[in-house]
Structure formats: structure tokens, C-alpha cells
Image (tube, rainbow, N blue to C red):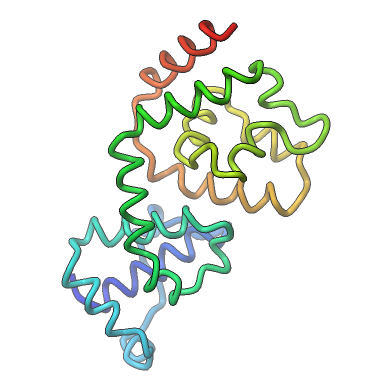
Length: 198
């Protein structure tokens, strides 16, 4: 991978996670980036280093992990990625390599304390599941798996009209296309835990 390609990947994924209209997969990661603008950047050497140390797939994962781990991807500065990106990437890799384990832990904690209906109840403002996510007790991956099982995202979009949820909703929807799982497997785990806790 060339340094300019790493830069283009960064721009494409930034657009993907921050703009409603841009879809990384649909546009195959294409952007209007020019070589000229790349050479004017003070941080281009970092992109050179990144392109030498990672494969094309790893560069994509690296940026996805950083955008999805950010509280607000629109305000994620490249300097933060340069400084903390590698640690964020390693934590993300660990979570994804042990996804079943993390999902099970988070599901036991969530449904061990709460009934299913209460978890998704928006009638008094932010539901339990969102509060848990915002305090880091539920990972974005588990949130996406829950949406594939319970289909709660669209319902929340209709009922929660606040900037906090809008930021979370956009992030989860954008991240969802990078999560490839066997929904049936996770449905089974979820059902088992909920029945045990009932």
C-alpha cells in the first residue's frame, strides 16, 4: 500500500463515519483527494509509516477502530489517531477476536439486572441500553448485534430526538456494514441468557 492510498482510506472512512450521504462500500473508498493536497500535509510522514507497517485490510481496520471508538467521529482529529490510534486498534482487535465472549459478558450484565422491555424503553428519555453504551459497559459491536436481533435502532430514531442519540445512531449504522456475524449464533446466546435470568 502506498502512503497516498493510506491517506485516501483515512479520508474515505472519515466521510463514511461523519456524513449521512457517503457510504465507503458503495463508493469503494473513493474520494476527491489529490496527490498535491497530500504532499502539503505536515502529517504525510505518518501515513508513510502506516502504509509500511500495515496491509491494506489492516489500514482499513485501523481507521474503522479509531472512528468507532471515538465519542464523536466528526471531532476526531488526525493528531489523536497518530498518538493513540495503535492502542485503540489493539483494544478493538481484542474485542473482535473474542466477540462471542464479550457479547455474552455484556448480555449477562444487561439482562441480569433488567427485563427485556425495560432495556429498550424510551418513554422516560434515554433507555437503559443507551446509558450502558454511553458509560462503556456495552461495546458498539454488541449494540449492533442487538439491533440485528431486536431491531431497536429505527424505533429509537423515531422516539429519541436529541443530539446524543443522533451521534450514536449514525455511528452504529455506519459501523454495522463492517460487522459480519452469524446472527443465529448470537440470538441463541441471547435467548439462553434471557431465559436463565427470567
